[in-house]
Image (cartoon, rainbow, N blue to C red; front, top):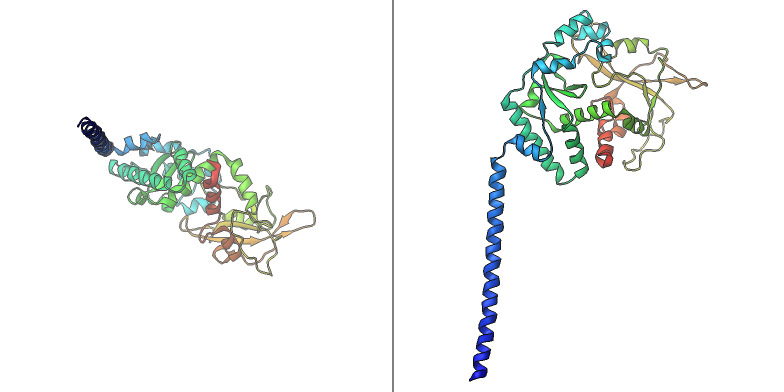
Length: 334
């Protein structure tokens, strides 16, 4: 009789422990669920600014009056405005252009700020899931830039950068575009840490040649001034040793890797109707025995038909290797 009672006590004790553990497990699960619901509710109560602040980001939006400080008559961008560039912007003198640009910006509305904030949060959360290097890169530069909104006529509505300010077209604040943002962030990076880009340029086949090339005078005169970078001293040739992380593009048998080209956006006339009235071209250069370059009058190559360049750079309608630069940046610079 005593033995049966002992077994009953033991069994009752074991069942009690099991019930206690089960009860605690479900209680803990409920606490976790409640905590998650509370966290979710708290997150939903945060404004988009507060959500960005949790990631260490404070987005700076400039109103029209504050943003006009980016236009400086003494800047190289302004000083390089020759007559064809002024004509393309419907101005006769540099003073005319400066005065015109003083009214070239609009205020960013609260609704537009909210649209961009949501876009940035979604972009960062999306990128974090598959590429932390790229996410850190985007966050790093968002902390250091400001946004301004350009009028439709400013640079023909093309987004561009001045200093650490990204001037976006008005439509971008309604329908933000990922590639446009990354493109302009990269220009800010390029301006602040140009030495990091020099290595990439050389690896991609570019050569800095700080001399005016005889025969290119008409093209220099008609070259479009670009606020994101105005140097005309870069030449390109197909790299003899493509970067190992890139897929090597087959080179045609008739391609000479020692051929060098000057590439630019050149106005179609001395009196262009707009900033976009250009031809994107490549000019094949001749190199003398002493290493200097000159241009013999030969037909320009339309950049869209320059297959060797486009295949290697992975681009279709621009005149610099942004996509490959971005691949390098995302793979570990930041």
